[in-house]
Length: 379
Image (cartoon, rainbow, N blue to C red; front, top):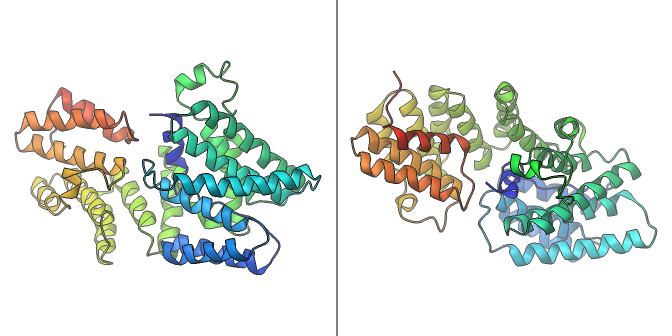
């Protein structure tokens, strides 16, 4: 898995923030972010257009960047946003760099530059241009540190900085091994990352719930912290019941924790809201896995048959990570049916998929185990 693909996990729903004095435009941006948290991207786009047309700062372009990042963290292989991301990031950098060059050494310009650099670092990393991505990652941290040095009350900047530090301090081992030579790889600070995000959750100006989602996602990486992650996600689900990502993240966490009955309970509640594809099938995949966890092969198979055939035919319109969950479930059900050859082919396909997109480590471990011996239900 590439460095940037790993960072992609941590960036889930990174909407960004712009801490400004109270103004009609900052209030409008706050409204737009609320739409994104609700999963209402149509109204968020209306806000974006109004901000770009009427604001005397690049707040609208910053808003646009963070909407694009939100989409990319759902499917990092999507390329339809490339041109727009470069356009909006360029607008932001042109403005903030001119402000800073003119000795207007204020926090907002640093904050804007930091957010635009962060988005570009992510973009170039996804394209495999790691040298450029690393340079921009270092610049991101420098800009955001300068923003806080200029205005220590700019709490929202700590959200981006916390994510940047976490990503930089959790690079894959082979990158860390050569970090003395790769001077462009930003140095991390795990001692700051999670506390920074929690500070935004508790005291942020405009986007505490954005930070809450990122914070909960990072907590999920540590088994001992998953109960806290669950609490944070439940808060988001309660506040934004229409946002499929919050619902699905909670369902996946419960499944990971082995809370199979609770997984089914929350998933059924989610299905009662008539979700659309591919979210509908994702919920059904995790329900099938919960039935497997409970040792009920028949109900797992029955649920799996309800999944949209698109998952088994094409990955063009689906995130790679969602395909991997489907493939693992398919392979294990094939094993339970005694179709060993098909099961092995499916497990091998998962490992091949992991070469081009992010695949959860749980899935990879299960696929490797399935290649060695047939999957069986736990007693």
